[in-house]
Structures are given as C-alpha cells and as structure tokens.
Length: 107
Length: 116
Image 1: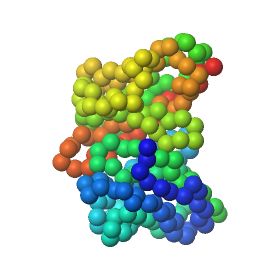
Image 2: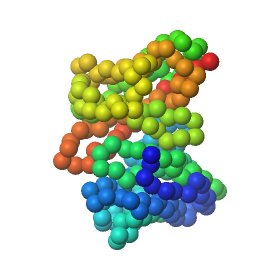
Image 3: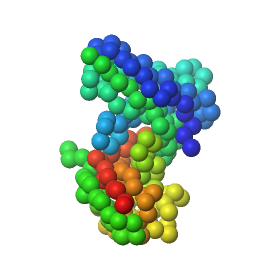
Image 4: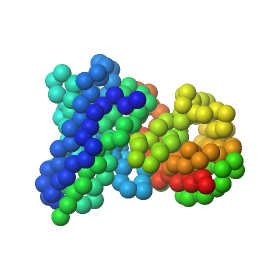
C-alpha cells in the first residue's frame, strides 16, 4: 500500500501557482520523496525528487518540511497542459503508487 | 533520445485467451519494470529486471503471468489464460540502474488490455 496521503482532487486557475500537498508521516530516514504525474492516456512522467532539502528544476519546486512528514509540490505558473494526476511517493527503491491528486487547471 | 516503446497500444481478447506485450526500453537502461494500472488506481509493480535477471516479482500472479528479458534489452509480458480482472493498462518503464544515485523511471505509453 502507498505510504502517502494526498487530496483526491484540486483545482487551479491557469497562470496561478498550483500547490499540491502530500503527507508522508511514516517516512523513514533513507526514503526519498518522489513526484510523478500522469496525463490522460499517457504513462507517468517523473517531475522531481528530494530527501531533506528543498529542490527545484525546470518543471517544479519541492518543499519538504523539516520533520520530513509532509511536502508540497509547486507548479509556479500552471498551464492547461499541467492537468494530470499527480503522485507523491515516499520510497527507498521501488515505487508504490497511490491514487494521487487529480489537478484540473482551468482557463 | 528515444523513449520507452511498447506494443501493441490496444488489445481486446476474450477470457481464457493468451496475450503478449512487448517493451523496448531506453537504450542503455539496465533496469526494466512492468506495471499494471487498473482504471482509477495508480500503477502497481508486477516485475522488475536488472539486466536479464529478476529483482522483484513478488506481485506477479505467476499462475498466469510470465515475463522475460532474455538478452537484457527488450522484454515480453505474457498472460495465459486471461481473466476479466486482467483488464488494465500495462506500463513498461526503464531506468539507468545506477545504484549510486536515485533512479528516475521513464515510462512508455502503455498497452490497454480489454478482456471480454
């Protein structure tokens, strides 16, 4: 079973920041936090991962709380193409996907 | 760089028939994964290969599912015989397999299987 908790769905206006929360209160010290997303009818796509420090890449930013029990994925300027299911995974090696958060970006 | 290729994209069969899916990972990727994704759920790992050896097949229903990666490159997943509950999208993913860093998985588009 997935070890993370995410809201079932979220809405965001185009051009605004999308902040997707994830709870991983049972995360172990050597487990990373991964984020993937899955656009309709496509395979999942890697977004970002982190261990303790906040991370940023060309797609998103990952903010991990100091106690590592939760994190937030930030899409700074959401577009319609960001509409997808976003999966937060805490894992050391293999990935265990939950049901994720369905993010709907609207005009 | 070419992505993970899968074929066919769609397959419709009747229960008790057999079916096979093919995956060509990204060139040079040592690790290959097969996932099953039932509608409304996240992908579930079926089997993981490191080169041509099996790393994890704990969730593979071995009475009807089999997979191979004979030359450490392409892989085939087979279901024989199929059941109605096997209707799902079968995803293949690959990763570089570099244990020194976190392994990013790259997914193919999947094969949508419908069992009637």
